[in-house]
Amino acid sequence: MKVLLSNLMLLLILASCNDSNTATKPLLTTENIQVAQKITEASKPDNSSRSSQDDWYWKNTKMSSDGKFQNWEEGAVDIVMTYRMKQNDAQPRTVKVGTINAAGEISMTLPSEIKTETKLDNLGNLFFYDIQDISNLNYENGNSGYFSNNSFLVEKNGKSVGNLTMGNSVRTTYNLVNQSTLTMGDEGYLLYMAYLDEAGSLKGTESRTDKVRRDGTNTIEAATTVVYDLDFQPGWNYVKVEVIGKYDLDHERGLNASWFKEHQHTVVSEMPEDAAYFFRKQNY
Image 1 (spheres, rainbow, N blue to C red):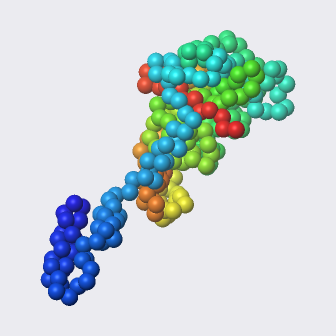
Image 2 (image 1 turned 120 degrees about the horizontal axis):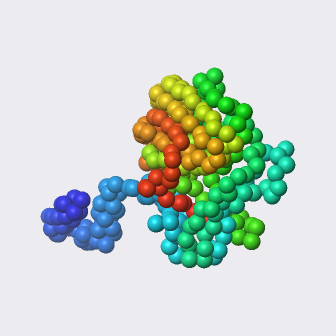
Image 3 (image 1 turned 90 degrees about the vertical axis):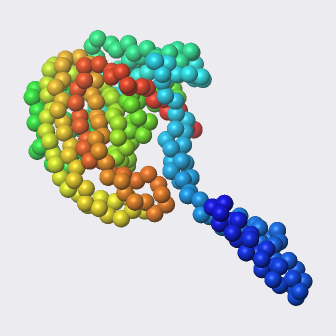
């Protein structure tokens, strides 16, 4: 781009010299230099849209390191899970599962027993509506009592100040808890917790091809697979939902636009080493 600017200036100078006998105003003016600079700037690649999108995911968001949030400003708070079903008579309406102290240190202290709110085979339990044909799902002991949230509430003095998710990606841990971004292809995983009264399982695989698009992109045919391979033990279970592979959609404004290739749901024995907590402060 510097070469382009230099060549343009040289041409302007030569033109001025060749016409020196008749011209009353030199061509190498401040205005011409500004025009050349604008041409140079316009030729530079514009990554601002993608950068601003990254900033949006991180807005009001902190990621833990070694079980602690640096520069924690919320003071001592509780980490809770909520009962969603109105007809459930559980009191209180939340289950305390941990704390964050004033220094930002996270401590998960799961109760050994809780009251469950529904059954494993109630499809209302599926936070991830990523399967279209429910006949693909098979249950073992589907009558087992079940309770889970795909994210935690963070409360201070009984009032919510934000939410907490677990996983290895700021994008994935946001996308998979919001129906509008559930099919995004940002790779990584979300971790959430489920409590069962008894052992049970939920299994099934669905492979399909859909015509998909997002605002600002063209329609493509996307072959996708959703796998449920959940073997639950009595008590608390870590459920890992992983996005594997993606289709990059060409967006007219250069935004990150993608579609997932596979969602894989599994139970893992403990929190993986590369997982972190993501706190998203509530906007008022």
